Length: 422
Ligand code: SDX
Image (tube, rainbow, N blue to C red; front, side, top):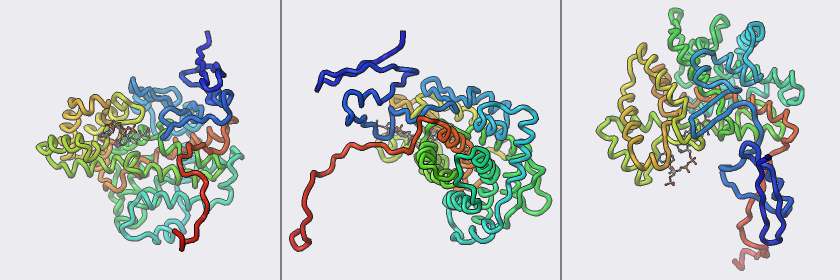
């Protein structure tokens, strides 16, 4: 029997019965009752704004799957570039498909010299790398006069390829500029993660990227690649719904990610752990959070009301990195803070668990990244997810320009009065 709900308008006695599929019903049913009826849903807690086949989350069970593949299997067995192909195309590539994808990405990593030499020099010496990253992504679109033609699939895929290939180069550029170091050109003989670490840290000719650290970077990229309708992806979809070019849309998504409640949380976690400083200060910090004087950054999630599966994988990856780099002194504070919070009624009753950002910053610090680079490291892989959602939206016949309604609670009509009479 089809599952349905029946909604009755008590004002008129009219009623409508509407099918429920996978827990979703079409809000158009409300307009059958009254064309002016609108649902009030601030921050979209109960609103499905689209149909999507890219990523599946189950917040209760702590499940995350990209195109049906569990994140645990992808993190263990795949590579970021293969996962990027999967998210963008819907299927894992065969050997020939991957070879072409790998070749194409590798040979599009260069950025225009005007970006590298003139554009970036316009920033203040201590500009935040994420602010530079967002600006550079938007500026990148001005180098390609075909950027705007989003309905030519081959053309859109060419812009997607350029963005996926160039975001590590742009990210490394922001770091090298911030550190007063010369820019390192992409090296086409290296893998995606190795090339990124090489562009970040190469000084002179004797620098070698440790393969264990490159693999840890690759796994972190896999874990951050997509997460269904999060804040940044929603920004991407809203801007893309106006048929903006993919560079401008990606810059908008990255701007949302920059927020401390979203992708900026990994930076906020390390600043929080540094401020706590020692496990002996944890009880006082926890009490301050419970008094509402701040949040336990890296904890809580709109969807996960259990462990974020990515946090579990990152925590395991952290130990593999610390084997090489030496442990991060803040790890003890993080482990104790997690233990205390998980056993405290305040957090348990609100179903607050560590999310992807709680441990990722500790690895990033151990890999030598300054705290200001952490959100940029989130944006590199998430660019793939944003573009997969943009592409899916443009192919969805049910989608059109995003333009939600509102609940007007302002004053009624009134007449203008001259300033002398106010
Ligand atoms: C990401 O959406 C995604 O998928 C995002 C992401 C992705 O991959 O794209 O997973 C990445 O953004 C992870 C989240 C990173 N942000 C943080 O770690 C910042 C700290 N977390 C919180 O700000 C919060 O948990 C959110 C923003 C993540 C979720 O907020 P919600 O769902 O709007 O929940 P809420 O703010 O309504 O909180 C419910 C209650 C409140 O208490 P009461 O008012 O009911 O008393 O829980 C409390 C909140 O005060 N609460 C916290 C808390 N998070 C929520 N209290 C202390 N510390 C926290 N971290």
